[in-house]
Image (cartoon, rainbow, N blue to C red; front, side):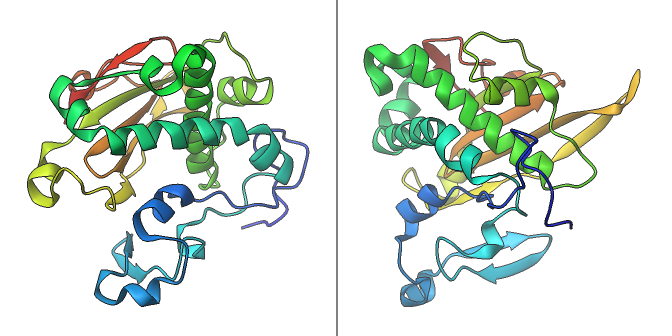
Length: 241
């Protein structure tokens, strides 16, 4: 792959940083910052395309995308989005029993009075995650509506991307309610639009334990996966898959 690809957000600077395919903060929360050799039998294993690889640490290249963003976009521009995500996941992990009981999340409980801005930042983190996933495949381009939202830091927008959030009881039954060291992404599904051969529909999920975040771009959501969200609800109701 060409190492001189442009950053998919600004489309001007060379992409000289590699975003983690599995978020580094989630890996660190589960396994720590040091060498994972010391974990011995509990050393995390990465599964992809039928191949198993023992992770050496949270910065292991096996969990990084090809270079996809410039330093400016990956650090300065998107840092508020990363923080919004980390605060969100910390809330999920620390309030798992409550979430499982009532099946909704109130963003004001996470972010306080600043929840409109912070849930917008959270959605932009999901755009960043989605865009990096798409850009890792040289056959795809990141949709322009998503690039515009990130690049211009828009607070009001329309987009083909919809997010839902879900619980997966199969994971709970097998690994328990506190299984937040089970981290991953599903297969990326894509389809051509019949009336626009160069445009694709996309869908995939990523998860921290039993908590799933589902991405649907230009494709109908799975209605059982939860209420669709584009940073436009104070309370999001969670589905079950």
